[in-house]
Length: 338
Image (cartoon, rainbow, N blue to C red; front, side, top):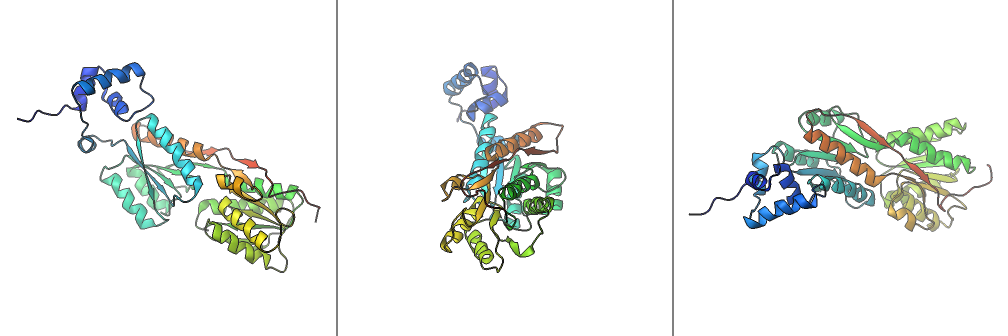
């Protein structure tokens, strides 16, 4: 007759600890004291305990897994955010499943089904394509945190920077350097951050009595290619700008390349400022002036919010705003007043 497998409850009883502590040891959590860890491992080795992960997930209300829905893995900003999520999750023994969605709403809905089937405990959404009404409905049933790209969906938490103020600071920097012909290159117009950053751009112009010119505002995808294409459109204008605010670093690098290919120089002929302060910003020639987003902290804070709502009876639906910073590099320089 086959011997009955030991349960995690029995391991906890023999080690004199809680089931949660055994789970943290199994997940290599740093929160467990070394003496306690050794006590649990001694029982596990002595009785050759083998955790039945599927059975555990089906019996208990928690799986110790969370989903992270991200548009892509190709941009380093998302990798830095995920690192913060993973490190915070590891502290409490959570596994993080990163799921690229390619900005497809149906793909997001498919992944949310994992919560309904109890295959994950919660979700962190980086730039969702779902409406705020749909996110609100999901948030009533599941623990959801929006990160980086925030809507005012009910029953969800959010963590981001102040995108409007960050854009205002970026454009104000160009104005302080003497620029008045300032263009904007942005990402998808459906994104809430795009709307907020244009507001910051307009506010900075208005505060300095600089007229808004629609022909100097271009929108595309957040990638190098569109940054280059949209910059070429600006360069072809009869009255071209002298500086360009780009809503992310990838577009800004494409912008710098287009300027260089057209026979101009940055920052002597055109000043360029990016957004995010990704690793690529320092590799650009010249290195990019940019807005720093605390990417790791965004992820860490998002996971902290999610863990609270997954484990606490009193859920908190709050929006945490982290601090941004203007990083000055070689792509902007003071010029003569126009």
